Length: 277
Ligand SMILES: O=C(O)CCC(=O)C(=O)O
Image (cartoon, rainbow, N blue to C red):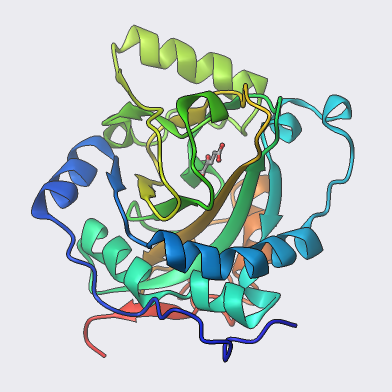
């Protein structure tokens, strides 16, 4: 097991988030914050994140045998529980403070983390809305998506329907061929602006709202697109009704021990930033 005592760069300091970034996030439902972590900080954490990811991988089928969702990326959850270095990265106060400032809330909790590695030749990530899955009684959810390697438009960076978070929930579409077709139609019919697909350096952060429609193109290179995500919600949020199987799965996986109506504050949902503390 890797240990945090190995002179790991500290990710708890304040980051100077520009008011323009906050405005952009609230308007469009997504924003890129350049240099939230430095190249050196990513280099220091990456080996332990890769190790935790390898331990957490549950689908070992070759790319060709997977469905559309499975071909989009190799998905690995809750790396923070695998080793101290991954925990230090996912629990970063610096990252969490930026998430809280973008949401405009005093404190945020961890929902969960995911490593999303789009393989060489990996398919597109279909259009979807994250919050369809999440039994959280709030619209104020946010995901940090941070590459561990340089990501070019050919490798499948995040893409968005800008401002579409304001339309809220537009139908129960689990991620897959149906969500891709349905949201592609909605984006076209409503003339929503397509944004994103920009190159990112290791440590740049793309943040997006839980209701913004987003996708990612295929990885047309021979390089693995390594990205870490961390999902946050405001402290004080309650668990929403478990009104479909995806939400029951998510409650069992990420909000263990919490029932609808309870505070979403299970043992795996620590407060990662609190301006009142
Ligand atoms: O990494 C991807 O391709 C998609 C990520 C995503 O949809 C998310 O983080 O919500």
